[in-house]
Image 1: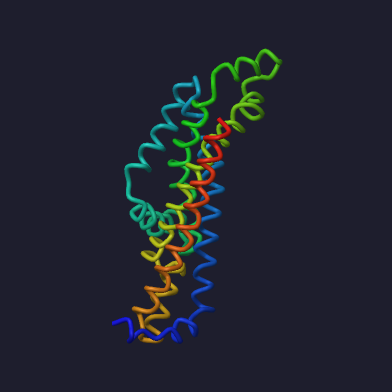
Image 2: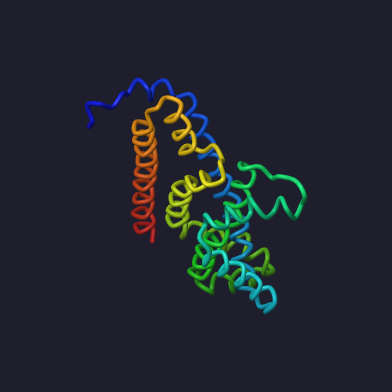
Length: 221
C-alpha cells in the first residue's frame, strides 16, 4: 500500500495545510493562556473561605469536567447564536469554548500547585506585612506555577491533540484542512497520514520537554 502513496500531493497541499496548522496552534496557545489565567482564578475561588464563591467555582469545574469537550463545542456553536441572535462563527466558538473548558482542568492543576506550597510560606508573607492577595501574587502563585509547570505543559499537549475536535463544527484546523485537501486532490490517505505525523511530532517533542522539566524540578527539590 505504501508504494501507492503520492508525496507530491502533500507538497502541493502544504500552503493550505499550513493555514490549518496555524489555527490549531493559535487555538492551543489562546486556550492555554486563557485557561491558565481563568483556571488560577477558579483555583483561588475553590480555596476561598467564602462558601458561595467556593461552591460556585466547584460547580463550574465539576460540571465541565463531567461533559465531553465535543459536546461543549457543539452546544456553544449551536445554542449561543440562538441566545444572542447572531452567529458566532466556528473559529470564534472554538477559541471561546476551549478557553472556558480548559480553565476547569487548569483550575485543578493550579489548586494542587497552591496546596503544594507549605503553609509556612503564607504565614511568613503575612508576618512581613503582606495581605492575602499580595501573598498569593508574590509568594504562593510563583511557587505553585513552578511546581506545576510540567503538568501544565502536559495538559497543553492534550489540548493540542483536542483541537482536532473543532472539525465537528467546521472550523478550519489542521485536521479540517487535511480533509478538504484530501477531497480536492482525491487523496485522503496521504493527507491524514501527513497530519498524523505532524500531531505525533509536535506532541512527542513537547513530551520530551516535559520529561526534562520534571527531571530538572526533581533535582531542584
